[in-house]
Amino acid sequence: IGYVTNVIAIKLLFRPVDPINIIGFEIQGVIPKRQKELSKSIGETVENELLSLEEIIESFVTEDKVEKLLDKIKLKIQRAVEVKIAEYPLILGLKRPIIKYINNMMDEEGSEYVHEIIKDISKKAEEDISISKMVESKINSFDLTKVEEIVFDIAKKELRHIEILGAVLGFFIGIVQGIIVHLF
Image (cartoon, rainbow, N blue to C red; front, top):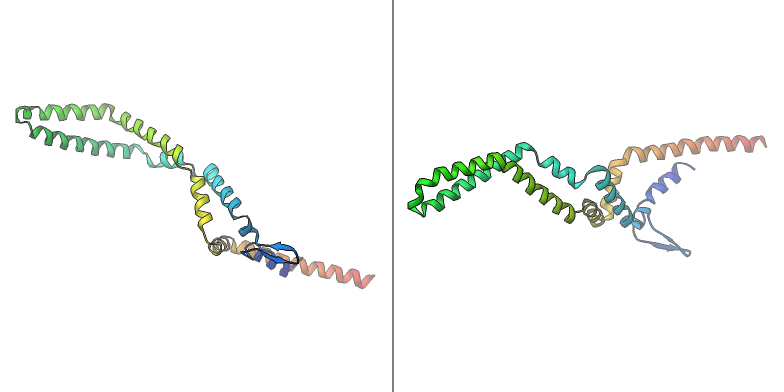
């Protein structure tokens, strides 16, 4: 137990990337060996504990955005009515009442329609999209040196702390062993 063994243990998390055979034993870094399992586990954790599709959709669909969407829908319908009615000069006088009726209907029921549509889209998205699978696929597509870089960037201080603790622990164990050997 000591600094050197901890440094080696930390390096063995990622190295060797490809398995090597030494005297009948296959040696491969823990992360390269278990990358698929780890990526699946990370994906499931992200989806179940951190970020669900439902939460993403809920954060995106606000009343303010629904109102803006309704305004755009009303404007599009109004323009479509104006274009279509212009094709029929005999009913040109109905343009304003039709637009007023559509606007009133959208004001009264439009929000409900939009929420219904969003609910349907959300349900379909939840059936078709898996955050877990997306994260898993992304991690599996990473080059292992990229994964190593990410982990070391995130845990640099902690890994250095482990190395130093190994040195301190090794030092004290060495002193205790020296005292025991000297006494006996």
